[in-house]
Length: 255
Image (tube, rainbow, N blue to C red; front, side):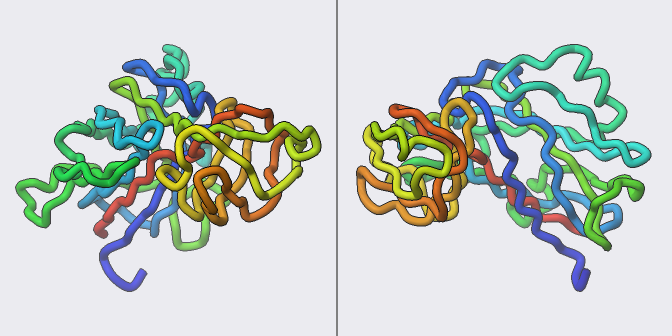
Protein backbone atom coordinates (compact mmCIF):
# COMPACT_ATOMS: atom_id res chain seq x y z
CA UNK A 1 0.00 0.00 0.00
CA UNK A 2 1.21 3.54 -0.71
CA UNK A 3 0.22 5.28 2.53
CA UNK A 4 -0.53 4.39 6.11
CA UNK A 5 -4.30 4.86 5.78
CA UNK A 6 -6.90 2.61 4.17
CA UNK A 7 -10.68 2.99 3.77
CA UNK A 8 -12.62 -0.26 4.07
CA UNK A 9 -16.26 -0.07 2.96
CA UNK A 10 -18.25 -3.02 4.30
CA UNK A 11 -21.92 -3.76 3.52
CA UNK A 12 -23.02 -6.98 5.27
CA UNK A 13 -25.84 -8.94 3.64
CA UNK A 14 -29.04 -9.63 5.55
CA UNK A 15 -30.87 -12.19 3.43
CA UNK A 16 -33.85 -13.04 5.66
CA UNK A 17 -36.76 -11.31 7.40
CA UNK A 18 -35.96 -7.96 5.83
CA UNK A 19 -39.19 -6.35 7.02
CA UNK A 20 -39.41 -7.95 10.47
CA UNK A 21 -38.36 -6.09 13.62
CA UNK A 22 -35.47 -7.48 15.66
CA UNK A 23 -35.43 -8.16 19.38
CA UNK A 24 -32.58 -7.28 21.72
CA UNK A 25 -29.71 -9.81 21.49
CA UNK A 26 -30.85 -11.08 18.05
CA UNK A 27 -28.13 -11.64 15.50
CA UNK A 28 -28.18 -8.47 13.39
CA UNK A 29 -26.01 -9.97 10.65
CA UNK A 30 -23.82 -13.08 10.48
CA UNK A 31 -20.08 -13.09 9.74
CA UNK A 32 -19.30 -11.01 6.66
CA UNK A 33 -15.82 -11.21 5.17
CA UNK A 34 -13.91 -8.19 3.93
CA UNK A 35 -10.34 -7.64 2.80
CA UNK A 36 -7.80 -5.06 3.94
CA UNK A 37 -4.07 -4.75 3.21
CA UNK A 38 -1.88 -7.15 5.17
CA UNK A 39 -0.32 -6.28 8.50
CA UNK A 40 -1.41 -5.26 11.96
CA UNK A 41 -3.59 -2.15 11.90
CA UNK A 42 -6.08 -0.21 13.99
CA UNK A 43 -9.53 1.13 13.22
CA UNK A 44 -9.12 4.86 13.78
CA UNK A 45 -12.53 6.03 12.62
CA UNK A 46 -15.98 4.72 11.80
CA UNK A 47 -18.56 6.32 9.54
CA UNK A 48 -21.85 4.46 8.98
CA UNK A 49 -25.01 4.73 6.94
CA UNK A 50 -28.02 3.09 8.61
CA UNK A 51 -31.28 2.88 6.69
CA UNK A 52 -34.49 3.67 8.52
CA UNK A 53 -38.00 2.24 8.47
CA UNK A 54 -40.63 2.86 5.78
CA UNK A 55 -39.15 6.14 4.57
CA UNK A 56 -38.39 7.55 8.04
CA UNK A 57 -34.98 8.00 9.66
CA UNK A 58 -35.48 5.37 12.37
CA UNK A 59 -33.18 2.69 13.90
CA UNK A 60 -31.29 5.03 16.25
CA UNK A 61 -30.49 1.97 18.35
CA UNK A 62 -27.51 0.26 19.91
CA UNK A 63 -25.55 -2.57 18.34
CA UNK A 64 -22.49 -4.66 19.13
CA UNK A 65 -19.81 -5.46 16.56
CA UNK A 66 -17.59 -8.53 16.63
CA UNK A 67 -14.42 -8.87 14.56
CA UNK A 68 -12.83 -12.25 13.81
CA UNK A 69 -10.14 -14.01 11.80
CA UNK A 70 -9.68 -17.51 10.44
CA UNK A 71 -7.64 -20.05 12.42
CA UNK A 72 -5.27 -22.22 10.39
CA UNK A 73 -7.20 -21.23 7.29
CA UNK A 74 -10.63 -22.09 8.72
CA UNK A 75 -13.22 -19.28 8.72
CA UNK A 76 -15.22 -18.51 11.87
CA UNK A 77 -18.34 -20.72 12.12
CA UNK A 78 -21.75 -19.17 11.57
CA UNK A 79 -23.39 -17.42 14.50
CA UNK A 80 -26.85 -18.40 13.29
CA UNK A 81 -29.74 -16.81 11.41
CA UNK A 82 -30.12 -13.01 11.33
CA UNK A 83 -33.17 -11.68 13.15
CA UNK A 84 -33.13 -14.62 15.59
CA UNK A 85 -31.46 -15.45 18.88
CA UNK A 86 -28.00 -17.03 18.71
CA UNK A 87 -27.59 -20.56 20.06
CA UNK A 88 -25.08 -21.16 22.85
CA UNK A 89 -23.23 -23.72 20.73
CA UNK A 90 -22.59 -21.23 17.93
CA UNK A 91 -21.39 -18.62 20.41
CA UNK A 92 -18.89 -21.02 21.89
CA UNK A 93 -17.70 -22.45 18.55
CA UNK A 94 -16.49 -19.06 17.29
CA UNK A 95 -14.98 -17.64 20.48
CA UNK A 96 -11.34 -18.35 19.59
CA UNK A 97 -11.76 -16.61 16.24
CA UNK A 98 -12.83 -13.29 17.78
CA UNK A 99 -10.16 -10.57 17.78
CA UNK A 100 -12.19 -7.46 18.55
CA UNK A 101 -15.42 -6.11 20.02
CA UNK A 102 -17.12 -2.72 19.90
CA UNK A 103 -20.37 -1.46 21.42
CA UNK A 104 -22.04 1.28 19.37
CA UNK A 105 -24.43 3.69 21.09
CA UNK A 106 -26.78 4.67 18.28
CA UNK A 107 -28.21 7.77 19.94
CA UNK A 108 -24.71 9.11 20.68
CA UNK A 109 -23.23 8.48 17.24
CA UNK A 110 -26.10 9.56 14.98
CA UNK A 111 -26.05 12.81 12.98
CA UNK A 112 -27.32 15.66 15.15
CA UNK A 113 -29.52 17.30 12.51
CA UNK A 114 -31.55 14.16 11.78
CA UNK A 115 -32.44 15.69 8.42
CA UNK A 116 -31.64 12.84 6.04
CA UNK A 117 -35.25 11.69 5.43
CA UNK A 118 -35.00 7.87 5.36
CA UNK A 119 -31.53 7.07 6.70
CA UNK A 120 -29.02 8.30 9.26
CA UNK A 121 -25.26 8.77 9.33
CA UNK A 122 -23.33 7.61 12.37
CA UNK A 123 -19.77 8.68 13.21
CA UNK A 124 -17.22 7.61 15.80
CA UNK A 125 -14.34 9.95 15.06
CA UNK A 126 -13.46 13.60 15.56
CA UNK A 127 -9.78 13.93 14.66
CA UNK A 128 -9.12 14.27 18.38
CA UNK A 129 -7.39 11.23 19.92
CA UNK A 130 -9.35 11.83 23.14
CA UNK A 131 -12.60 11.16 21.30
CA UNK A 132 -11.37 8.52 18.85
CA UNK A 133 -13.00 5.63 20.66
CA UNK A 134 -12.86 2.66 18.27
CA UNK A 135 -9.85 1.03 19.91
CA UNK A 136 -9.89 -2.13 17.73
CA UNK A 137 -6.69 -3.67 16.33
CA UNK A 138 -6.98 -6.07 13.37
CA UNK A 139 -4.61 -8.68 12.00
CA UNK A 140 -5.76 -11.67 9.97
CA UNK A 141 -4.63 -15.25 9.54
CA UNK A 142 -2.09 -15.53 6.67
CA UNK A 143 -3.24 -19.11 5.99
CA UNK A 144 -6.73 -18.23 4.75
CA UNK A 145 -7.05 -19.25 1.08
CA UNK A 146 -8.75 -17.12 -1.54
CA UNK A 147 -7.67 -13.74 -0.24
CA UNK A 148 -6.33 -11.27 -2.83
CA UNK A 149 -2.53 -11.15 -2.90
CA UNK A 150 -1.19 -8.55 -0.48
CA UNK A 151 -4.43 -8.51 1.53
CA UNK A 152 -5.87 -10.28 4.55
CA UNK A 153 -9.43 -11.35 5.34
CA UNK A 154 -11.29 -10.10 8.41
CA UNK A 155 -14.87 -11.00 9.41
CA UNK A 156 -17.46 -8.77 11.06
CA UNK A 157 -20.77 -9.71 12.70
CA UNK A 158 -23.40 -7.61 14.44
CA UNK A 159 -25.73 -8.13 17.39
CA UNK A 160 -28.87 -6.00 17.75
CA UNK A 161 -29.52 -4.31 21.06
CA UNK A 162 -32.90 -2.89 20.10
CA UNK A 163 -35.86 -3.36 17.76
CA UNK A 164 -34.16 -2.59 14.46
CA UNK A 165 -36.66 -2.62 11.60
CA UNK A 166 -35.44 -2.26 8.02
CA UNK A 167 -38.84 -2.60 6.38
CA UNK A 168 -39.31 -0.11 3.55
CA UNK A 169 -43.06 -0.13 3.00
CA UNK A 170 -42.37 -0.28 -0.77
CA UNK A 171 -44.69 -3.02 -2.01
CA UNK A 172 -44.55 -4.90 -5.30
CA UNK A 173 -47.66 -4.19 -7.35
CA UNK A 174 -47.60 -6.85 -10.07
CA UNK A 175 -50.28 -9.40 -11.00
CA UNK A 176 -48.96 -11.01 -14.18
CA UNK A 177 -47.50 -14.48 -13.54
CA UNK A 178 -44.85 -14.18 -16.25
CA UNK A 179 -43.70 -10.86 -14.84
CA UNK A 180 -43.37 -12.38 -11.36
CA UNK A 181 -41.53 -15.52 -12.48
CA UNK A 182 -37.76 -15.64 -12.05
CA UNK A 183 -36.14 -13.41 -14.64
CA UNK A 184 -39.48 -11.87 -15.54
CA UNK A 185 -38.71 -8.18 -15.93
CA UNK A 186 -36.40 -5.34 -14.92
CA UNK A 187 -39.25 -2.79 -14.56
CA UNK A 188 -41.21 -3.29 -11.34
CA UNK A 189 -44.47 -1.55 -10.49
CA UNK A 190 -44.75 -0.67 -6.81
CA UNK A 191 -47.07 1.05 -4.38
CA UNK A 192 -47.05 1.92 -0.68
CA UNK A 193 -44.19 4.18 0.42
CA UNK A 194 -42.77 6.35 -2.38
CA UNK A 195 -39.60 4.48 -3.51
CA UNK A 196 -37.90 7.81 -4.22
CA UNK A 197 -37.82 8.36 -0.44
CA UNK A 198 -36.15 4.99 0.14
CA UNK A 199 -34.05 3.65 -2.74
CA UNK A 200 -31.28 4.99 -4.97
CA UNK A 201 -29.37 3.62 -7.98
CA UNK A 202 -26.92 0.94 -6.88
CA UNK A 203 -29.03 -0.39 -3.99
CA UNK A 204 -29.23 -4.20 -3.95
CA UNK A 205 -32.70 -5.31 -2.92
CA UNK A 206 -34.44 -8.49 -1.77
CA UNK A 207 -38.02 -9.45 -1.03
CA UNK A 208 -39.07 -9.64 2.61
CA UNK A 209 -38.58 -13.44 2.55
CA UNK A 210 -34.98 -13.10 1.32
CA UNK A 211 -35.60 -13.76 -2.39
CA UNK A 212 -32.94 -11.89 -4.35
CA UNK A 213 -34.48 -9.20 -6.56
CA UNK A 214 -31.47 -7.36 -8.00
CA UNK A 215 -29.72 -4.00 -8.14
CA UNK A 216 -31.63 -0.79 -8.77
CA UNK A 217 -30.71 1.09 -11.95
CA UNK A 218 -33.21 3.96 -11.64
CA UNK A 219 -36.04 5.04 -9.37
CA UNK A 220 -38.39 6.34 -12.03
CA UNK A 221 -41.46 7.57 -10.14
CA UNK A 222 -43.58 6.97 -7.06
CA UNK A 223 -44.85 3.73 -8.66
CA UNK A 224 -41.93 2.41 -10.75
CA UNK A 225 -38.36 1.22 -10.23
CA UNK A 226 -36.04 -0.26 -12.84
CA UNK A 227 -33.40 -2.88 -12.10
CA UNK A 228 -30.07 -3.30 -13.91
CA UNK A 229 -31.43 -6.59 -15.26
CA UNK A 230 -34.50 -8.81 -14.87
CA UNK A 231 -35.08 -9.82 -11.24
CA UNK A 232 -33.23 -12.94 -10.13
CA UNK A 233 -35.77 -14.89 -8.07
CA UNK A 234 -39.47 -15.56 -8.47
CA UNK A 235 -41.54 -12.90 -6.70
CA UNK A 236 -45.13 -12.56 -5.52
CA UNK A 237 -47.56 -9.68 -5.72
CA UNK A 238 -47.45 -7.59 -2.52
CA UNK A 239 -43.88 -8.65 -1.67
CA UNK A 240 -42.16 -5.92 0.30
CA UNK A 241 -38.90 -4.80 -1.31
CA UNK A 242 -36.07 -4.45 1.21
CA UNK A 243 -32.38 -3.59 1.32
CA UNK A 244 -30.04 -6.55 1.19
CA UNK A 245 -27.41 -4.42 2.95
CA UNK A 246 -29.26 -1.88 5.13
CA UNK A 247 -26.10 -0.93 7.04
CA UNK A 248 -22.88 0.35 5.42
CA UNK A 249 -19.66 0.66 7.43
CA UNK A 250 -16.75 2.85 6.36
CA UNK A 251 -13.75 1.97 8.51
CA UNK A 252 -10.77 4.33 8.50
CA UNK A 253 -7.77 2.06 9.11
CA UNK A 254 -4.25 3.07 10.08
CA UNK A 255 -1.12 0.93 9.64
